Amino acid sequence: MAAATATLACSSSGIAVANSRVTRMQLQESSGVSVVKTPFVSKTPGLKSTSRRGLVAVHSAGLGATLPEGYEVKDRVVVDESHAGDAASGNVIDKLKAGFKNFKESNFTQNPELFEPLKSGQAPEVMIIACADSRVCPTMLHGLKPGEAFIVRSVANLVPAYDPSMENVHHGTSAAVQYAVTALGVKKVIVMGHSSCGGIKALMTMDDFGSDFVGSWVKIGLPAKETTLSQMGDKPLAEQCTFCEQEAVNVSLRNLLSFPFVEERVQKGEVELYGMHYDFHDGKLTSWKAAPSMATVNA
View 1 (cartoon, rainbow, N blue to C red):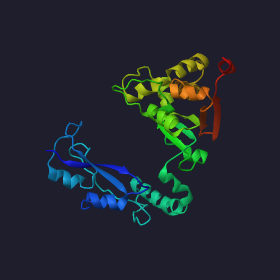
View 2: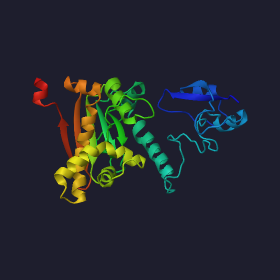
View 3: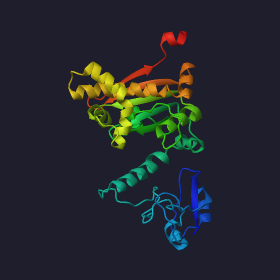
View 4: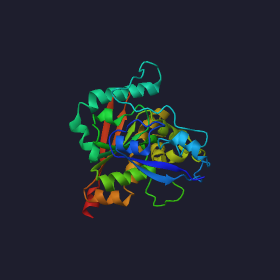
């Protein structure tokens, strides 16, 4: 049976509470959210046709229709300065909510000159491609404010080579690179590796790269592994990994240059590429630039 669901496009910095009794019109008027009716498609993987009554009960706020059968949106709450959660409960979700409440009170509300312009768009000068490792936080490490950096995170901060194929492949990192360079017009792209990287250790110790998602991804760094073994083959694994962490950054920089729109802008001096390596054992950052050689410039 066909049923109506909603596609929500947020047009403001916040969204009002939407519960099972809030109508589409009320939601639109109170939160600045535009609501577009789209047909419920039962052919979506993991979804089966359900009754209109069931959809109304679970998805009346316009959210959750794409969840698989047997799942629903629960415990949905909008956190602002009036939130009365228990930050000391030991629950990490409560901690996150409390953290946002503190941010809203002490930062968002107190700095309208920073946050108001962000409502109309973003114009970051730099893109940072960092590892997903929880010990690496680019905004904290570099003292960045909202709107200053476009950040994408991946396992081992790897960037795949340019591949125009659009079939059966999700180009997440590639899409971020394209958007940052061609739409946002960033001037600097930084690939930042770090010490004790689990992805690099996997790269250095794995032989079968086709058995799982991690192996399939980290094999992007195989040229760095080959260089590491040729130059550091007689060294302990820990030293090899430290070397490879930095050489894998260079692999990603090389792969960035395989994107035509990146290479063209680098040659014109419109975009600059940088590598960084954050050592959280000793608290130091190593930085370098990948620039055209004089021979290339004079060619």
